[in-house]
Image 1 (cartoon, rainbow, N blue to C red):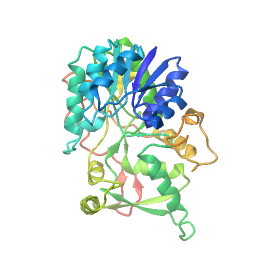
Image 2 (cartoon, rainbow, N blue to C red):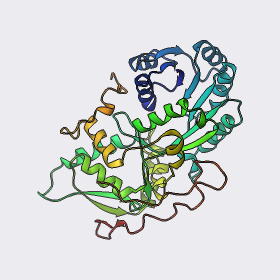
Image 3 (cartoon, one colour):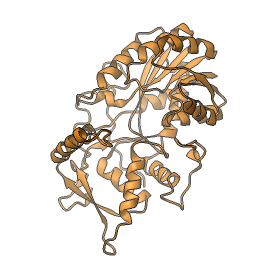
Image 4 (cartoon, rainbow, N blue to C red):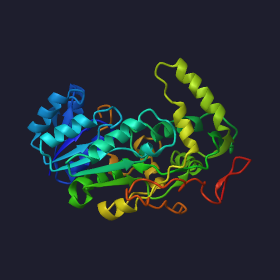
Amino acid sequence: MRLLVTGGSGFLGRHVLVTAARRGHSCVALARSPAAAAAVARCGATPLAGDLDDGRSLTAAFASAGCEALVNLASLGFGHAPAIVAAAVAARLDRAVFVSTTAVTTALPAPSKAVRLAAERDVRSSSLAWTILRPTMIYGAPGDRNLSRLLALLARASRLPRPAGLPLLVPVPGGGARLQQPVHVADLAGAVLAAAERPQAAGSCYDVAGPEPLAFAELLHLSSAAVGCRVRLLPVPLSPVVALTRGYERLSRRPRIRAEQWERLAENKAFTINAAARDLGYAPRSFAAGIREEAAALGLAPRFRHPSTSDIPAQEPCLALPRVPSPRPSAGGCRCAAPPGCCSAPMPGRGISPGGRWSG
């Protein structure tokens, strides 16, 4: 299949392009700069000049691509969806896959939530044979904006002087009992391509997450183990951390972390993947395995190296987990909308003891 890809030079995009080539697809990737064109070319795609901010040139670019399907990996949070949908319809693309995010289910007043939901409505109301994927937090290889920073921080901290045998003390805002369900970038890339390849996925929206939820505290323990660091978790109140971060945001021109990120630690982020497993053949790896792979790819676990992500160009030139009951699909029919309150309670029987030890 000949695929037209937007967002191909990004973290997920590079993995999708390389995986598509392995599966026998040819890709044309929209690029608005020479750097982006070079990045997608390194991944085996044909660069196509175009700019999502220029609707007229976008329509012309889509029409000239000669593709059968659109794979939109560009963020839906910047208001580009109407122009992308219009250009895809004008180019008479048979299929269209759009990557959104499970972050649209947050109860917080996130600035981009309304924009993303409006983008999803534009896609659903179009004449395209559309599929929407909503991934959770993406991790798994150098270049991710989430756990690679955590792994690097843990690795650096583990080298700080401390008495022999004493574990590294790690503060955990909010206590760490709320649920997370990160998705490995290679698993997500496979799901994106499966959605484009399978006509039966048209007209559906899927959550794409890890195989099962795990408490944030357990995520920290597994991440620490991946870099060979023994930790003791110290629960700390969330509200002072949020207040301090808001002050930092006001003072910093380019804050590296935002208060909203801390506030989301108070939300459970657990999602059912049954529909994606059934329709897309989706079978994600465990977080324990995936985080070890990422640590190895970052050079933080030198004795372990997994081949699945070793040849994905970087941004620059380039323990079975305990089962948690999965949330049920909503009665409204959307396969990705978790019902209110479905994950309102922390993982039963597991948490952090007052002394900071992981219990359960």
